[in-house]
Image (tube, rainbow, N blue to C red; front, side, top):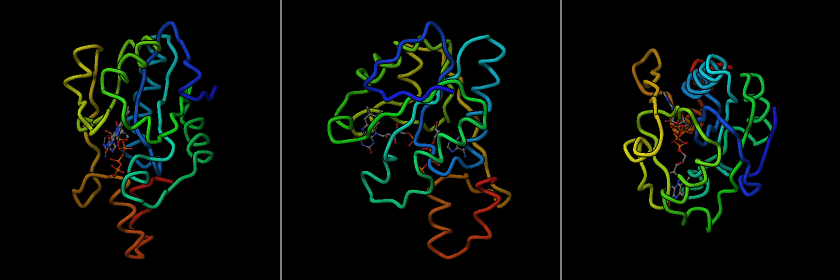
Length: 175
Ligand SMILES: Cc1cc2nc3c(=O)[nH]c(=O)nc-3n(C[C@H](O)[C@H](O)[C@H](O)COP(=O)(O)O)c2cc1C
Ligand SMILES: Nc1ncnc2c1ncn2[C@@H]1O[C@H](COP(=O)(O)OP(=O)(O)OP(=O)(O)O)[C@@H](O)[C@H]1O
């Protein structure tokens, strides 16, 4: 697996990409990444995880970070990912428009992009799956819920940790 910083401007001839903070690499994330890796194997192209450091919620809301970049990279590798692109999430990065981000993705020549149905990107979260679909083939991944019926999310896991309910976080994290 290769790890690149976003500002290295990696170019790939073809790829399948997934995008997100992936803090915790929980069961929802694992499904998104496994689907990306599975599809890339079928298509015979490289799989790419495009991620952010720090996670946007840590940057904007001071959220507690569940997994370090090093740990995330380790988990991506175990899931069989070919390339990881890490964008340093700082003030200038957050000001980039959705269109600027889309131009960057075009360098990776995605055959398809796999994200959750609610994925947002770009300044003030203006970009969504419908905008991505105007430029790429996007195949949204259905939401993964826990047995209690709530959507598995890094936010939910952080809340459970704050409540001291470590036992309940385990089935959501899946590791
Ligand atoms: C270029 C770019 C700019 C962004 N700017 C903002 C922003 O201004 N405000 C915000 O809350 N999130 C911003 N984000 C973060 C997204 O809302 C979102 O958290 C990110 O794309 C990761 O997706 P995920 O939260 O589903 O993992 C930006 C993301 C990108 C790629
Ligand atoms: N439960 C889930 N089911 C399916 N896809 C998911 C799930 N959780 C996250 N994803 C997708 O995984 C990618 C990374 O998501 P992200 O890092 O925002 O996770 P999150 O758990 O929603 O985080 P947070 O709670 O901090 O917003 C995005 O494409 C998102 O749509």
